[in-house]
Length: 563
Image (cartoon, rainbow, N blue to C red; front, side, top):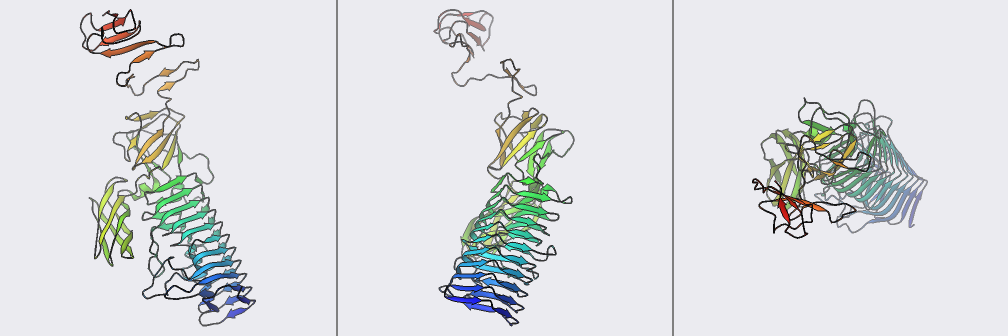
């Protein structure tokens, strides 16, 4: 290391305790920074050309308290130029280690890190962010924020446990967070994994994800959220909710998280999903292994099944009629209002833009979010109502001084492609096809009735449900003596329908060539080839020419009319 600052104390300064700029290889270890007007320990460089960088530095084993920020590394470009240029494109800090520090009672952030290749590990942050900040601010790229402990003695005393809005290619893993308003904020991030964290006692939400994130000053970070994975987290709360996805973040996976809720919160508050691209898999609520979710009883007619968003499997124990609607709790909450607006094309040369929402409803409003002259996202400010059924689309017009921006609004949210829902049926259940909403398709092309003690695996496809795996117990039964019974349901016919020139053929092990049973119009003699014992029905009818039996030969002659 080129510079070393060890076992020093910095306090009572009007601005910062220790401020090192444009350094490479500095080690700040075992020091105390407290009661400073600005930051306790800060390393950065505000080169407006983004040329000079911090590199290969470490800040370890320090204590920082009663500052605005305890430890601050780099910045998010906000002070390099006027007007500010925000984002991860031009980092000030590279390859820096922030580890094993104790930061407490700092008003904005315990630790604030911005840059590339940053490791924020093993730090203890207590009661930071009373002025609306966070335990850790991580505006980072290609970085690791892991194994930190962030706690507040009074729940909700800070806005965030870890605020990583606008991060890219980063892992937020194995952190313990207890007591902030919001546990983790990976909103406006790209290619970020939130994995294996324990989040508890949040006053509002465990994890919030806005499609586009902005700073406390209202300046956005220039990117929209995509490719976010939230996996294997332990989430416990007694108020507020679990995970919230707003304004259509794209390609989000919610997998194998364990949610725990107290008596005053319900499973339906665990996930609110305003998006159209979502994977939900293997999550649990209070470690239950079987989730009974029955349709709301509305007479004996078509029923609506509202299932918790975090689940991909439920048990139906009772129903008063056929199920015509299967929607998630967040889709039901959004109702006929606009759930989110998806940008289809960003356009160019915008400095101002306004959003107009069409359709037959009223009251919805939204604002465009601009970066680099393009519309990168649309923030919904009012949902309105009366815009149609769940998953329907509504036209959107973007006006301004640029051109080419396009967007579409969704009523509530559609069924995401490949979203799975396994329905375990404890009794015979009918799933309506005609008139269902979202549409419930199945291979029979009619209403689907399944017997008791069976399962149907539904899969989201282009905004509808498709029955991918369907039990056939109502159509095939096995008496147990080696025989098979083929039946129909609901008074329906039993049809044998060979395709094209195919026929119904009856065979056995002893006579594999078998016989055929077929139909046609007119005489089969000289027309239909069949083995002896076969039969033929003439759809034209007529006395003595309707039913024929093949008596001789295997060709198309030898037919005799018997009725």
